[in-house]
Image (tube, rainbow, N blue to C red; front, side, top):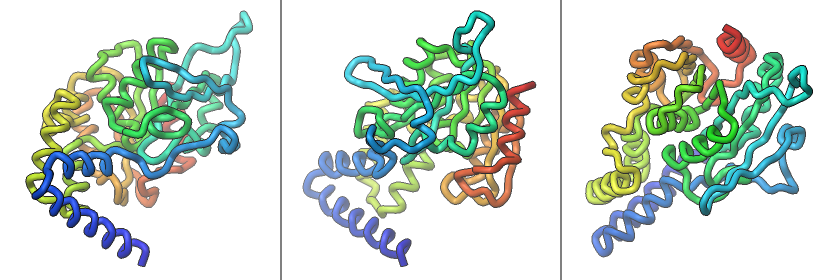
Length: 288
């Protein structure tokens, strides 16, 4: 019943936007983009942080008009008593926040490294109302300039943002990448949105032109697996056969183009992919 109601609402919104496009295509495009790029959940309040984030050291990094929140767990110190600078960066996905790593953290803490999770644009305690992979990549870049992480772990669009970051900023200091249930092709995400609302071809074309103007890249070229062709970082790519949010083919594309990648197909974990066995494999990959 809930899914039926949501689908009906989506089609009603789409009908409104299609009518609006006849009268004012620019406005219809802008409203459509806002619906596509603004998360409906995932924000946090400082006074009501999840318990796992309360156990971390908090820091806000500001650049330009933006700021983003990071959460640090230090598990070990050097012989000089300083925090371990061998850093793992955790990059969550759409409509989530840094607390999504709660189940993975106990496994990562076995590695005796510094673990830092980030809140994405328009998520958690970070600034903004708009979320997209290029903006997320800017956050990752600002973080990396300060902390130089050796390992990056991304879930869902967090993984896609890592790929775009590596493509745009050419960071060769990162040693290992872990991708969990990550989409590759931006056009698939855009087309899924168009089909969900039933938007007409005029709005679709206007949106695709908007993406090009905003990101300076054609929607057909905005593909993580194509970016991955140039990467020499070691990668661990995991995707579930029954992921209904990001289809298994997306993970397989990454695996077939990333020259130094280990690919794991799971079954029954869905899109979240919380699983102790999987986390053990990830820890072993990092140890290698």
